[in-house]
Image (tube, rainbow, N blue to C red; front, side, top):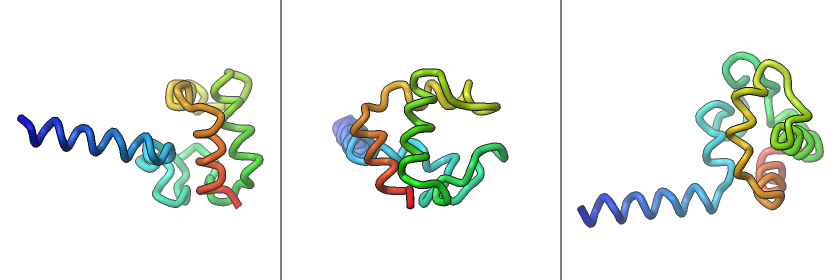
Length: 91
C-alpha cells in the first residue's frame, strides 16, 4: 500500500511540474502529432499562437471541431501553466 501511495504522489508531482505532461498522449512528446487527426501541429505554432489558442479554449472563444475535447483539458491550467506549455513547445 505504501508503494502505491508513493508512486501516485510521485506521478502527481511530475504532472504538476510539467503542465504539458497531460497533452503528450494526443499531441506527442514534442507537439509533433496532429491530435485525433484534427488539430494543428503544436511544434509548428509560435509561442503566441499556442498561448492564444489555449487561453481561447479555456474561456470558450477559440476552437473548431476539438473545442469540446479541449475545454476540459485546459480548464485547470493557470496562465503560468499556459505560458510554460508555450515556452516548451512553441517556436
